[in-house]
Each structure stands twice: as structure tokens, then as C-alpha cells.
Image 1 (cartoon, rainbow, N blue to C red):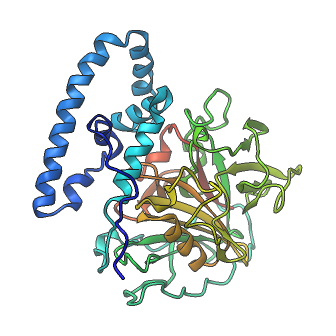
Image 2 (image 1 turned 120 degrees about the horizontal axis):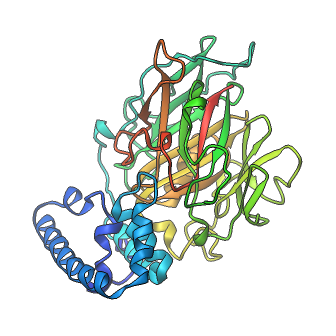
Length: 419
């Protein structure tokens, strides 16, 4: 039986394609195509750019006070490119539907396919160094995680095999990494995985300047130098709240109301993370320090939820969002209380859920998606210094720099520290 076409929507109009250059700033047009496809897509890029330049002139002349608004987006702090800022501005000024349509068309039009992924796409993190500044003496580490069962029919060397990384406390690694290929129909897809030993690490939520913006947040939307002595890792949070009905609570403030039933990353006063459904797995108690909600659980009781592919209830984002081949990230908790973070390019939501369940998550949720948003960095102490760190990306082809969260960022994120 032949496979159904990858595209699930009609091709956008030429006017809608104008935004493609900003949505796909990683150059996928030229990198992924071959032969005649590459030539045709270069022509599309030239067409899009010519149309954009013409519209930019009209924009500058006619937008008046709105152009000032656009300027504030371009001038905002953070590592976002001008393309990302333009997309954010367009979404916030009536362009959300057009951008969603273009993304849906673009990210479903070409499956990644089968084959052996290039070695440059696999995790390559240095061996652990001794952690400095650990404050919990005599902490008992969890047992090293058992190697995972490969999800692909022809496992690669190291696939599913845990490797100790980043830092260690009394000889015990604070985290391990590995990778899986979670999509049996597209074996080129790689999911990088981190497992954190929560007996040895604690997690802190950091609001961004734009997402949950406003004054008074403790760290100014970055990991300050004063907090880097025991820094182990940092990774992205979830969707912008204008795109979901979830909420957020941290530092005693609730900038977005919490919604019962939503998937929630919860941090307690000890810095321990748990993941579950708000209102059933968790409720508000004095020990809850942070709640970050994002859609609904995609792994529950150790299994991928049954309605993920169809999403007839609309629990997992905009229609057919779950079918897009794009950068995705997710987080879950294991039966022994460890945290697993998963990220990879060209994953559908089902592939992400497969990776979380395959990594041992008993409950798991999707975090942010798309190019230029998914970020996970592991940090090691620079020998002989009090607070200098060197960062390494979980996956080498993650678009953002390893220093992203050491600088002010517009989006909220999480930082992980040795206890």
C-alpha cells in the first residue's frame, strides 16, 4: 500500500509565502533539496525576497506608529534573529493565521526519510569533570540508568547506550546522555536524550523578557554570573502563552492562570521536577515553587497517549500541528524520579512521544517546537575558576548558541544546578 502524501494542506498563496524567509531562517530550502528541487526552491527564495523587499518599502512608508511597534521588537534584548522578531511581531499584529498556514504547509511537505543519520547529528558531549561548589554532602546518587531498547530496526553504535556527561559529584555523574531514532518510518530522525539524577541536581525556572515579561523577576531573564558556580545545564521551556490555554506560576506570581487538566512541569521547594496533569497529579501546595503548563500529556502511565495522531479533541495544538516534521522538545519523569529531556529535528509529535516513552518516562509533555527555539546546553566548570563555564549543545546542529541562556533571553527557560 502506498503512503499518503506528506502534505496535509493546499500550497499557500504567493502572498503567504512572503513570510517563509522569516519562518525558515535556517536555510532549509537550500540545504535539504537536491538537483532540480534545489534549483526550483532557490527560485522560490529569490521570488520571496523580491516580494519582501517591495513590501518592506510600503511598510516603512505607510505603517506610521505601527513601525515604531515593529522597531521595539527588533530592539528587544535576546539572541532572536531579525527574522524571528519579525515573525513574532507579525503574529502579534494579526498574522498568526497566515504564519500557521505556511508553517503547516512547509513542515509537512517533505518527510525526512530513511537512512543512517550523519555522525554530526549525534550527541557529542565531553566526559564529566568534577563539579565545584556542591552543597549537599553525602548525597546518594541513583543507580546508573539501564541502557534503552533501540526503537529503530537497525540500531547504530551507541544508540540507546547511556554515557555519563558534564559533571560528577563524588564520582557519580549528575546526568547521562544518549540518542534514539524514534520514527520507524523516518530513520534519519535522531532524538537526543538527557537523564538528570535529581538526587544530585536541582532545577530553577527563569522567566523571559517577552514571555512572562515584566519587571521584578529575580535573575533578569538569564543565568547571572553569580549563579554559575554549580550550573550543569539549561534547556528551553514551552509555547508562548498566546498559543495555548495553559498557565504559569513562579516566584509567588501567576502571570498566566493555571488550567486543570493541562500538562504541567512542577518544581518543588527542593528544586525537584515532576511532570503530570494539573488538578489530578498535582494541586497547589505551599511546597510548589513553579508550575509551567503546555498543552496536555503526550505520555501517561509509560505509554504514548492513544489520541495523539488524530487529535480530534484539539488537545495538542492547532489542527494537524502534531504531524509537522520539525524541531521538537519534551520532558518527562521516570519511575525512579529522574528527569528525561528529549529534543530533535524533523520529529512529529508521535516521534517525540515515542522517544520520551522509550527513554523511560512514565509521564511526559511536549515543550517548545520549531527551528531557533529548541535549545539544550550542558555546562562544565572551567578548572581554576569560581564561576566560568563552557557549554556544549546536546545535539551539534541545534541552531542557537551554547551561550544562549547566559545572556538575556525573551523566552522562559529552565536552568539545572548541582545541589
